[in-house]
Image (cartoon, rainbow, N blue to C red):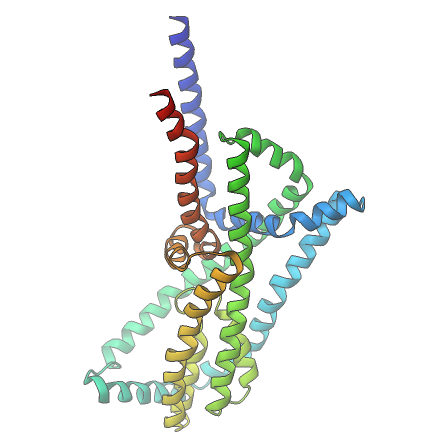
Length: 340
């Protein structure tokens, strides 16, 4: 009877813990990308950080601040220069709306010749305007969320570095697996996070260079700048590079450069748009020995769950599933067979 009462109390305490944890996670879910970003930065820098503080006896807090500054420069500078370069172009577009509409009509007339559908009629123009009006507040809100997540990311990253050894010991104690399987999980996590964190910038550089070649071929001015912006926006999922090359195609049509506009459209769809998938499959396989299917389906699932950080943690989630199935088979299924 005493054993039964003890088990009931244990279950009640666990239920309260899970309920409180659920409430906390639900309210802080908006900051999940920042938390995942902090984990990514920690995995990328922990070896170098420990080398500095243990081998060279550097101070923990100052070394952590140095790492934050380095990552802030690496992340912030491309974004800053991208905004600085694109802002005048956006102002120029809004001051020449008539030319923009001419270009849009030229593009839609080409589409109508091949499909027979009138894409840009009065109803569609009105729908586009309404869509832009409703999207702008969402965009501003998402920008605020991004800034908040960046602040949270560096805040958590600092304390993860300063308390790294204690945190890892506590995790090893709490994970209900053997030491060997904990090492397998740690290796899989480090391998996948590094391959994605390194692979995504490399893929963006490849797309930027590929787009620059296309812009140069089809006679665009400032092709280097537009290629740089294409590489920066390649980070964004689904329509990343299209944010840059689609307006450029419209601009070429508005200037009467029809064959150049058509050529850039075909080049962007066939080459710039597809080099992302080819590079993602080959690079992820080479850098981290990640199967192409895990990369593709992992990114699809990860973007819905984690937002932008899904590029890294989506494939990691798939790999965790496979690893945990193997661990369960080795650690628990074999024990059950032996007991039977």
